[in-house]
Picture 1: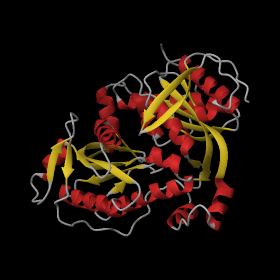
Picture 2 (picture 1 turned 45 degrees about the horizontal axis):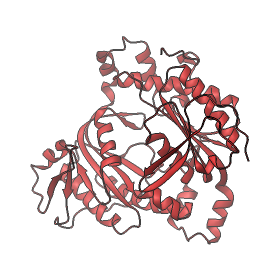
Picture 3 (picture 1 turned 45 degrees about the vertical axis):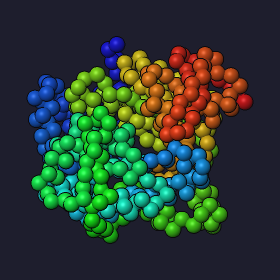
Length: 416
């Protein structure tokens, strides 16, 4: 289906619509021949050879259901501090904002592969003493460092390896990074194939103690300095400071999470431009519905509603608008307690944390059907009826997630 864009003209888009995508890049692309040669020329200044280390937590979904929210945030915070301290000590640069349970750092050509491996082994050994473990992946290649993010096939590869194929305490390396290490004398280091991924698990238990822990623990966190300091000194669920933070930032809400899939073109700038335009469609819908926008960049959107019926009305409106413009997407809904706090900038933006966000994300990502609305039971059980809804059940990170799926246009649903 051809896209019938209902956004304003590209020249009228505000910078914040593009999120981290520089609008001058998008404009140059729109004025070009839109072929591979034009893309290479526009992006040439952003291509950087080097290594990226990506990490992801292990077992967070289960922990999120067992422990208080602020405690979980503390558990997620500590490994990221350790990773940033070791990575920045040798010249690593954080990629993006580390808002969730993952991280990413870029190391330029001036940083030796052996240094990177020594630092990551030391980081994993220290994180092994934490309640929350992580897996990580390391890849040598060429990365597009654009607007604070990392793009391109090499960036996608290392992120997928970390998120989907690295286990607790593991360091997974690609063949290119392993080859870069072959010229280094590194005793006690071995490699075994990681299934059929083509990557290798680094066996580092016999490696000598190595690595230098830096002093910079301040990874690019999304919240304020006050909240970061609170996580440093978290005193448990019953402390006075914890109660103050909860009174200030906690709210009961229904989370609506939108994930827009990559468009069909294999060209990166087509994908980025399509997301910029998708965000214009999303913004038009949010102006007409009673929801709070936490973040939206055309690829990912997180919104809050006070009641299930408002959330479902909004999700249905989103689906209609995106479907009529030819986008592939999924929408997840989950309810419960979340923390909404100001970001660490002067733009008045907000960030969110809480199990409903994690659940809504999981049921967006780990499903095969597209253009559907998935409603977690935390929301569906509060509704009298959901006409046309079909039950679904998923096993994600050893946790069962179930609820109701809507595959077609739905009427407004009354709350219980």
